[in-house]
Length: 447
Image 1 (cartoon, rainbow, N blue to C red):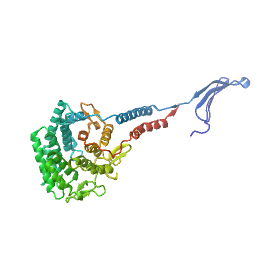
Image 2 (image 1 turned 60 degrees about the horizontal axis):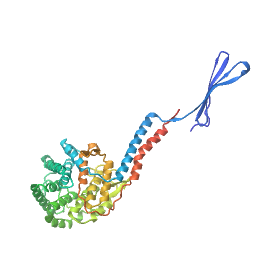
Image 3 (image 1 turned 90 degrees about the horizontal axis):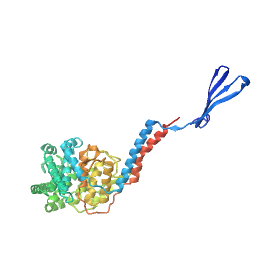
């Protein structure tokens, strides 16, 4: 606060027989000031004011801060406009652009580079790209040229999965060589390619029989993914893929399997555990990163819709207006290689996979919400010819996105999931601009 009255300033001098005084006076609110000169002549002692000047004092922003503030404001305004555009429009089909990007990325060694991020990074980059391409190749809504490209890409990824340097990472597992994780996901790709290649179709059926035998022979109900390590979600993937390849042979095996997995149920949620011990008993409680995969393949092995309702209730939530998936039902826990970094307890990877699960169950509303959020938050880049996300730094993420986008739609069901609150998202995006304007006002100066 300024004092009630600022003191006047004066400077005295003389010239010849005259004396003069320069003064400056500022009023109490510092809004105006007066400057002038008084001169005193010896004859008669007359005092005169000469050239009194009154000037207004104004506020001015400091130029560097103002420039930064304007730039931030424009960025925020653009982001808010994008929120409005995404919220009010229907999702566009970017599948071909994503596949072309992934094809180019694979040429540059993207699959191998993803291995450094998490243990199955290379594998997932190959298999998710291939399955998505296979679905496009089998979809008559795409042009013959697009289908031809998709067939080439799917077959290319199968060669990548069969690279010995990749296979050996999964170890030797007596009940099912290389484990249910590798074999189950690979079968999902064989199923797609087998639709146009009879030789691969026969191979897929044989692969399904081996998976079904391993599950049926397992005393715990679960087949190892790595030596002496089992995750229920991997067995669910294997059974779902086997049901597609050999439905008649899979049905009785799945029926027996469902009757003996109660010991792997997480009592707190009623869902399958994240991991089990050697006897098949739940070791870790249900988690979003594995439940999202289980939920995606669950409709392939059973008509039970209760699992999806339970999953949605326990894991799908909102934070700051955004719909996402918690890694832990209570929202408290630490991220790891399975979940990735957690944001307010939500797992970005589980949220992306849940788009596929929602499509598989026919929850169109949730699938659409998650698709729009990927377009908003995934930093899309490129065009319909070649499209990536996250500045192209995470090809495996693009693989998950396009795999989710191409997951076949189930029969539509009423949604139980929350929806994004786009108004709250817009307010949050406006906060940086509001903060910068506050800083600009705080550091402005008077002139």
